[in-house]
Length: 159
Image 1 (cartoon, rainbow, N blue to C red):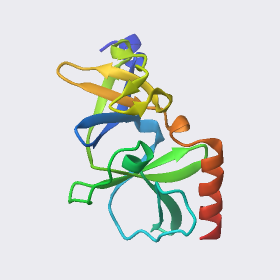
Image 2 (cartoon, rainbow, N blue to C red):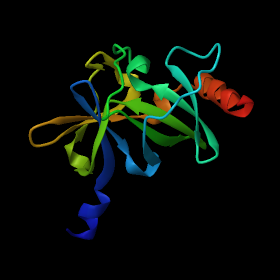
Image 3 (cartoon, rainbow, N blue to C red):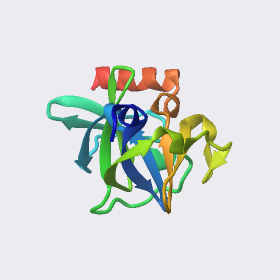
């Protein structure tokens, strides 16, 4: 692979919600954790499941299924919490499974359609066409609004 090919690809963490596969840039992922006890926070949005103590750091945790309006599901052995960094804040995202790390060529990424699997295009950065599958790339800065980020920061500060 030559240098320009390296510059034209990006590494993503692949995870699942239901039957769909999603990707988030590896540079935004801090760690992938097994589900652990989550302390509920009163008066938080429905998709905010609470906070976890992750190696001494209080981290808010969101259920990505609920955030996207997908029916909630029982956690399994495959369920993971992906710790991502959004605007200098670490947030945990509950996903059905985290499968893979993948290099995606930039030219395989197309702008998102208006709705994919019931998820609004605002949350999406694009759709990567891979050989036999589609990978939905998330825009983490749009998954949470500024107001929601402020709410999470206050939860983190008060925990």
